[in-house]
Length: 259
Image (cartoon, rainbow, N blue to C red; front, side, top):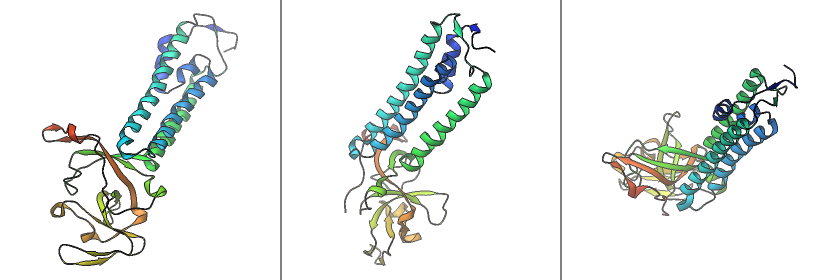
């Protein structure tokens, strides 16, 4: 294959390439730098957008998440459209580049996919924001079974925990599971519970309780939880479904009350 070999770039191939990964359509069209730049913009729009979103007030958190997703999707759609139009206008006068080979396309796609899934998606999910579905009733009435919540994983890197915070943490008796409960006691607090029992919360630990004591397994059962096992602070409900369908009145509710 020679650089001066003339051929045609097909619009549908450019579009399909763009669908597989942002920027691949441009690379197919011979615009390597543009394609890699679009991929970078796509990744950084997603990562930067969510990293900034966690600094918004609770009531705007859902808006920030959706705005970030919309901006990221816009980059994706525009890149596909631009690749299709560019390819369709090239005609049969395209000179093949050295990287216009199927195995180079595959290599670029594999590296790009690792960047998108390994850095953009996995990084933000593990370190910035994660969405959770609530499967149980232990936090009713504030959080109901079927609620979908936005959990901020940067919260306790930026601020100390407070009483009243609703948190996701590693369940001490089975570390493969996450639980959601409310912080009722901080290190050094003396806890006087309704059943008459008293607890002193040790250093580096918090005491967590469910809002519905009759349906909650919490620190009364498994003891205080290490601050190192606090995964995220739950800040807002972005969606909710119950036995009767979507609970529209719960969408957008902010959580956490001071105690």
